[in-house]
Image 1 (cartoon, rainbow, N blue to C red):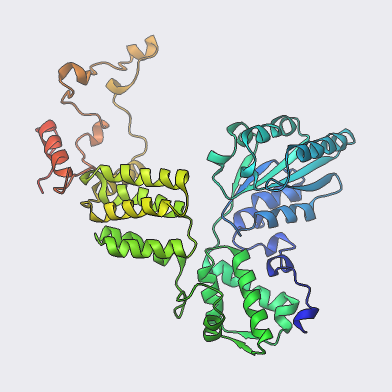
Image 2 (image 1 turned 135 degrees about the horizontal axis):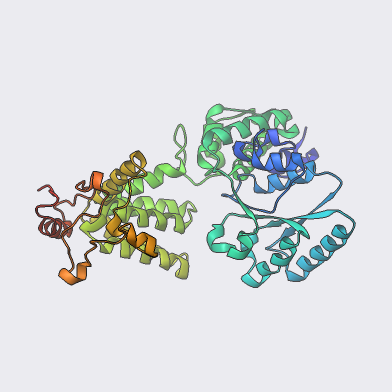
Length: 436
């Protein structure tokens, strides 16, 4: 088959799943016990917000719902990036007419996060009355981008990030099922598929369309084999991106974190710029630094968290390319800061204690006596207000069984040395904080 004879829909459209069984990576939604599949097959469809990274199957789920729905439902699409409030009202009017004859409109709203607050508000009465079943799709955190009132009327459905194995499965299926790929005369090395699956960031659309482009280019060059050498020759991805297995997105992110942890600002900047040059979302980098500031620096330098959060805010308010300066400043600061993982260790130790003994009773003196009965039971009795004794009352607050346990053990680095000295002074005779 010649290229000119092929129907050039994107590969991601040509092999879009036709049944729930075909959907990859979302077993909790589309598997035999999946919540969406169950709702559709039982005829009890509910309003929902589909939240997940790009290329994980949000639109595909909408298409599958449309394919499975019975005659009592009408399915319509609305693009928040292309249409406005007037278009929404037309859909709602259609929904009212359908409801009057015992039918229901299912409205799929793509990129619902692009609608402003007032536009989202128009969904409230129609979802409340059951005029429509709303299926909103978003790549942005609904907690921030969807009105709480609307979110409360919908079920939040989270799609999982596709992993390399999921993508590899999709690519192999495409080679078998797609008419062009299976008859192109081009064989594809497994290493090429592994590189694509590892370099696509979990986005099925990117991976499939990249495979399509590579096979098309190989066929145009009359090459019978697509291997790593030809892949590099075609330069579809940024130069230098390939190793034998391909350099995965999270490998660079890991190198960035480990460079800051190792106090190497030069390496940290190098890996950070590589991510940005490769098209990484600067918010991803800023979020990693906010986490790092508490996980690897903590109270040895409390300003680290302030710097990291400031960099995150700068990304939001300034944007690319200028925010690279802010990210660079933060990366350098975090790299040269004193390091301590004691906050992280304290969190993990405390979490283990809570999970092992989740129901230890709160001491009576720490409970609020909001009724006379509670007061009679001893709630609040013998509680000493610390401000009446200089800010510390020399008494235990943990449950009786574990009252002397210590979870946060400050080190002797940076400002944590002062924290350690203060805790040893305050709790002398009550808790034994170890000397470093």
